[in-house]
Length: 579
Image 1: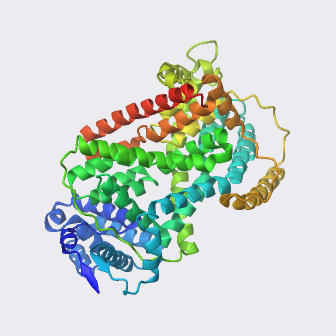
Image 2 (image 1 turned 180 degrees about the horizontal axis):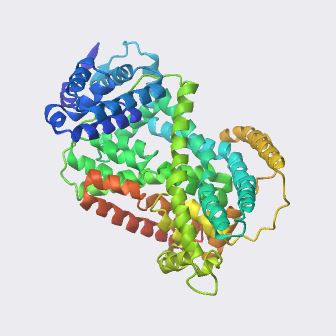
Image 3 (image 1 turned 60 degrees about the horizontal axis):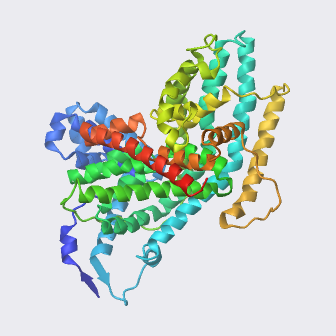
């Protein structure tokens, strides 16, 4: 026997969420449809976009008949092929499955079953993972495992990539430039100290990104992430926030830009603005290299936990700020009900997991080769221009460079937070372009001052042999680290991996700048990176979705909040004798 809660049922009018991949394609099509006055006046943009993805024959025939929608039809075809590649199934099947999942969620929220009703396997699992008491602890435990895997599994490969970029690749570039009679010139300096140091400093963390995306792909494809949203929905409702707001926040863990666009699923304008103001506090993938670098340097025994807490702190700040805005700026806002989609559990396929992991990681790498390389060259130029002393272009002390001069003027602002020197301040400024650039900038400004002894020359085949043996060694170390994820050390007594040259230099610099409180200053720095304004592309998306006024409120508010938190953490830690 079942009982239907009519009030809850009749009040639910939320849109079906088709998942991040499908929703991204829907957004692309909606943008094109909105630009077509004829289609915009005749159809709902979302309805038409879904019909195009379903390859509805009637709609396609009507659009082909006019001959004026070539761009829209081409995008629809590309979107369908893209989704087929990801899911390995027809798009209309995927959409139908999501709709049934939405219905299942609706039934779960409105129908109360008696003890005699038989439960499916998914229902039996959901009784545990979506339990009001156990749901959130299970979610936090799984997230902790994800970040533990990210650091322990990727750590050895991080050292390997760093060695390959700083060794063979650098040597090959120098050799090629020497053959072109460009050795020792500003071209070599730009390639080695600019492009390789900047882009390479970010690419070192590709194994970390791959590990994170691998773990998240498993959780998403299994169906658990929808349950995570369901669990957090209850918490957010209890705090006076809209449950559907958690969906853009989940997207924000990957990238802030689509997270802003995901706020379109919220029908109420105030809900969209409120959610948009909170989205930037979700740690996007671009912040992960910064967390990984500082966690490895200052929290080597608890790197996974340190990264995990950065993500959790972001969620906590977003919730607290949401509550504050709810009772002040958005006081009296009506709250619409939320129907959560609960798709059936599935055993993730290797093809789907690999595709999701590779697509996201390759997107990160493509960004590194484009935006980050351009930024690295600009930073190198500023480092190469002398503003004092007797140096010349590309032959000046880094302390006398234009970059140092500009960054030095900002450094006093961060002195109360413990990291008030020009190097760390300059890295934060370039972080406005993209958060990955923070690490790339550090690779440049610290590497320029490097004083390593010249290595013995090696042949091409010796370099290739070192790369292969290094990869095998990293794989062996990774296998050894797997038991540590559950707290079991099968290889006690073995020496820990040494820190890279960049890590050692950053550590020493933070210790010096903070007068011996480097760990505390590093924590303040990580929190500042977590809380301050997202990248320029995200700010542009925020302006598009929320408007200019709210964009400036967000940008200025985040800068102030990040500075206050960093200062309070560092100064408070000093008073308590920490760090």
